Length: 408
Image 1 (cartoon, helix red, strand yellow):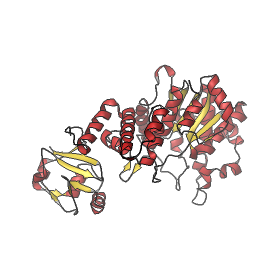
Image 2 (cartoon, rainbow, N blue to C red; image 1 turned 180 degrees about the horizontal axis):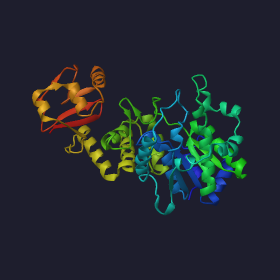
Image 3 (cartoon, helix red, strand yellow; image 1 turned 45 degrees about the vertical axis):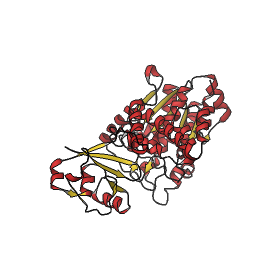
Image 4 (tube, one colour; image 1 turned 120 degrees about the vertical axis):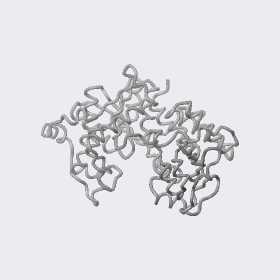
C-alpha cells in the first residue's frame, strides 16, 4: 500500500507540512490517528468543506484512523482566519442543531464502524475548562508577539481584533493536546489559512508532553476563474439536498471549467490517479466526458449512486435529447394563484427559486430567466394557467438550472 503522505501529495492535498521524512516514516510504521476540524456555522456542509473530509477519507483508505472534530466549542468563539470582521455569534441552540446536521453527512465519506473513524464535539471538553487553570497550563506557552504575526490575526489588526477571537488559537491548540492525550492523535490537517493554528497545537503538545506531532495544510481551493470553491452566483452549493438538489449539485460539477477538471477529479473523487490523469488530459469536446464522470462520481459520494443516476438522466434529457424528464427538480404553486394570475417575480419567490423579489428582478435584468424556453425581459410579466404545458411550467435560471413548477 502506498504511503499515505504520497497519496495526499499526489492528489494535491499537501500545501505545507511540518516534517516531511519523519511523518512519512511514522505513516509507514504505525496506524496514525489524524484529525480535521469543522466549525458548525451552518447545519450543512458545502462542497468547499469536503476538502478536509476527502483528505481524511484518503487517509482512512490508506489504513489510518481519522478523527473529525465538530467545533461546537470553538464556534462559540469564532475563527478570525480569512475574515475581515468578527463572525456573528451563534447561540448554543443554533450550534447544537448545526452539529447534528453536519454529523449526519459525514457517514457519506468515512467509515465510523468499529472505531475506524471517530467524531467528537469539542464543546464536550472546552466548556468544562477552568479559565485560570487553562491560562496556567496552556496560555503560558504562547507568545503574544508571535501570535500577532500569524496570518489569522495580522489581517484583522487594523479593522479590530476582539479579545474573544484572540483566544481561538489557544482553544484549537488545546484540541490537539486533548486528542493526543486521549486518542494518541499525532497529525492535524487543515486549510492553509489554519497553518498558524496547526503550528500552535503541535508546539503545545511538544512543550507539554515532550512529544513530536505533525501538521499538514491543503491549499485553499478556488476555480480557474478565482471564485472560492463551492460558491456560485446563486450562493453556496450545499450537501443538504433540501438546500441544493442532487440535480443542481450534479450540474455544478458538470459545468466545471476545462482547466479545473483534473484537479477536481483528484480532490473530490476516489478515482485512481492514473484515471484522473487520463481524463484530465482530454481536450476539446472529449473533455465533456471527463466532466460527466466528475459530476457522477462527486454526486454519488454525497447523494448515493441512485440519485446520481437520476441527476445524470435528467441532464441527458435536457441537453442530449433524452426522454426522461421525471428527475428534474420540481416546485409547486397554488392553482388558485395561477387562475387569478400574478407577476413572474412572485411566482419565482413562491416556488422557492429565488429568495426575494429583488433577486428575481436582478435575474431578469441580467437576462438569466426563461419560462417555457422563452426569455423573460420584464419583471411584471403575468403568469397564469395558460403557461402550464403538460402539467408544468418550465423555468430555466441561468444556463443550466431547470425547475418544473407544477400547480397543486
